[in-house]
Image: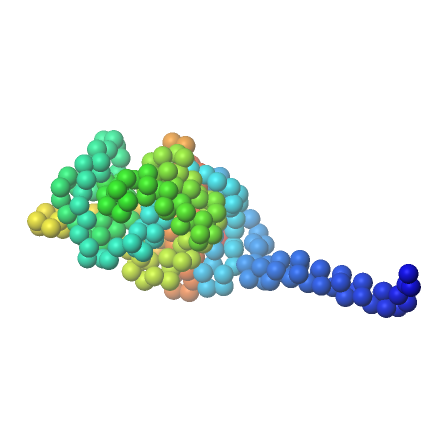
Length: 278
């Protein structure tokens, strides 16, 4: 068989190698340019953290950001985001018996079986007061069972590329409900684009009203609303396996940051140290 001349073979080989390099490595460089890696580290008590500058899209600090941890009540951010796609704000939702049978120490709004509240009021209760009864009511009204809702939300998470997250409930009470600091950080980036959602996590309190007129006063469970020139708003969580958790925002006049902290011994002290270094 007649062989190709060396110079032609060499040319064709170089073109092939170039194509391989282009296809394999270009996406990597593009991703690196879009999400810059942190240039320094910060020591926090949290097992994992992820801090994203929402103006520059630069990750400022991260540790174990893609490692899965029990989510505790930070999962309610996913429950809220997902359920907003299912309901209109003024839709009335029935409070089932299952939503009112909770551990005495579980955070709740005090909803009663058979009452009706609008979706937006339960949304406020879930995010401001970390109300497990509100979260369960939304889940059961949406899918008939909380476990079915959790399965549907997990599929939605993975479709949206929150691949480190999995829901076994709507509240985060189950230690099997997991997420990662990076998933929470990317969810917060999406939340920041929705003004009604974003503004809710900064509210200190609110009042919700049942269809019959019964009022419930809600108080935000976040223990650190301000620090120096910063405002802090977000969702806290705390179960034994998860430790203290926080997923939310830090802002001042010049900047806005998404912050996810998982497995902390003191999320308040971690937030203070973080803000001292911003």
